Length: 118
Image (tube, rainbow, N blue to C red; front, side, top):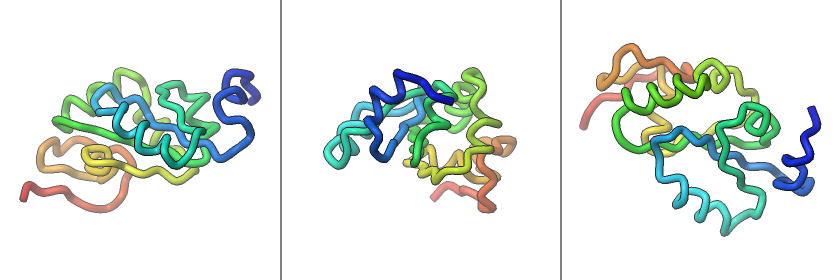
């Protein structure tokens, strides 16, 4: 699907999308990536995310609050079905597992592992 707004953002180069989970320090992540590429977009729009070459899933705070935000944006199943590389940062990595002791019912990207408190 072609979207003129996406072309404006990506200019034909590798596209990196940071998923706006509503529970992360997106500005810091975007600033850091912006030093490496000018094709970094923050979005919770499925069409924009789907067009990315690489996706980042950041997060800060509690797993239950993050999962609630992601669910409210109707992104859980969408993220599970992404075919491009997805990197979880901090809490985002925790949410990509199959189980967390903090929120046992959380299942996001099905990486077979369990997160335990240190």
